[in-house]
Image (cartoon, rainbow, N blue to C red; front, side):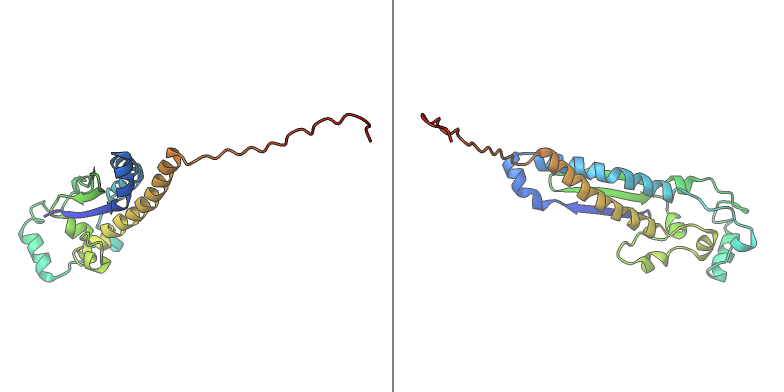
Length: 196
């Protein structure tokens, strides 16, 4: 079962603009959402795709969560991956990012479809980091695999800041009411006669 994270931004507050200017809300959501999400999604994918160094050193030894887990590893020939296990890089490269938008919301998803992801990266329980951490196996943590939820939450915050900036830029580009002021001081009529 894949681990997943998603972030949904609700744009119901733009309903008045939608009725006033037709499809503006849909355009703003798509443009602002995509612009705001581009860097965070690339950053999250790059950071999640990094792999720690190899195990086998005293600082990075395998520390089994239970004796039963250790026995299962050896009984199943490295959980079917062979002993000693050689990393293929497939797990780190399997992270996927997607965006989607409608008239009312913009959504992006970050997920890893491989079943082993939860044991290496933890879950993506966004509401509670400690709940996410309980899935990550001790030896993967010791080896240096990051807890994915911390990375995803960091980049979701970057997205939210970017979205505010992007919306402000779009609204500024739409323009505001312009005023023009002009003061006129008429010339005094010329007086006939003496000048003082």
